[in-house]
Image (cartoon, rainbow, N blue to C red; front, top):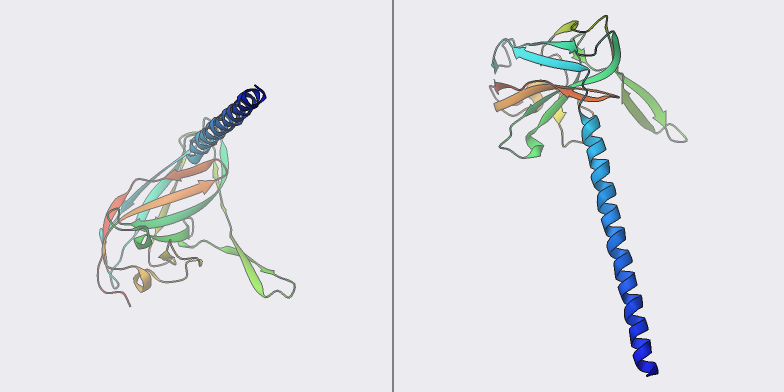
Length: 204
């Protein structure tokens, strides 16, 4: 009799542990789902819209190529926003290590400037942080035009762990790419349309 009661008690304890584990797992899944929804909600900045065009779809080492575009205020009123713009070249059919990035100062057609600070007890390392651009719009519908020469900025593969420091034709392999501009801010990121271009010639 005692053995039977003990078995029942152990079974109830085991059931209670399993039920608690299931509830905890369901809670974690719900929490993760909620966090994912929050991140997705914040991933796109609703205040600005970016559009780009290219003057020449074939980029050559000795030729000229430029990207023109606008950043438009969608907010219902004046807007001031700090942003870090980045150009991306990607080939959807290829692996991620065939994607390139170039942080860019769209207002001055040059690489995005950096704030460099020494780290470590003897300053043996350097911490870098991109300096954000401050965009100011007076009212809804205002836009800021820009023009970028992809050879004026510095590139690297997105898979690289270093800040981009190479010229376009010094790192990007010849081929057909989608170019897009991504502008990040505290409110999220805004991504332009994609334009197909061709990188000609051989990488040096």
